[in-house]
Length: 248
Image 1: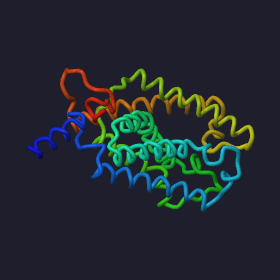
Image 2: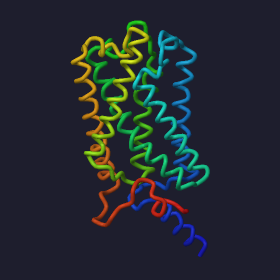
Image 3: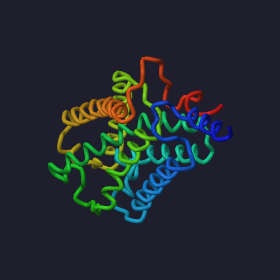
Image 4: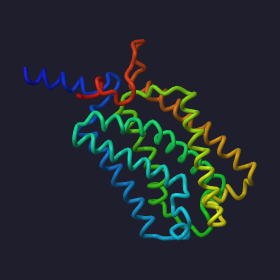
């Protein structure tokens, strides 16, 4: 009887399509703890290895990579806190943040490694030196950790392509204004491609980035379905819904 009750509670705790129970103090907590450790190490690296950005207006937060890393850190911290407390409300917050930062981290990885293959000086200033372990920590690990969280430890997303495009466009516009403000005080752009592209080119870069991020959201939703199933025609819960994914 006790084992049956425990099984029922376990099934109630997660969405029917969610592969692994989360929040939990097992695998879910380990994933979030490892992600949090990696992200904190990345910030420690920036502190211990100063460069021009450390003294500049906006610090390293000029970089989309570091802004994404910050949001990812908050996301996995919420995930870990939900694991420890078994709180469905904190789990909901984690899932809502994930819907924003997972596509963003995928975008960052695609843009960074894609442009670096063309010419690393498009994304890395001449005065910046990034060893391989730090490079992977900044530009690959966040996307990997958040994709593991999405595919195995989260309910399916319900966001559609138009809201996703609205979200990505908002992020692109806000970042564009932030970059231009930092340039006003520093006299240089965080990514050399912004200088090379010129004003018109920057508009193109931000527009393409917004579209790619929205497409990343759609692709991640499709990938979730391929891994976990697409469910039925019955209404599905929103990410982190309290009734389907935990207790009040």
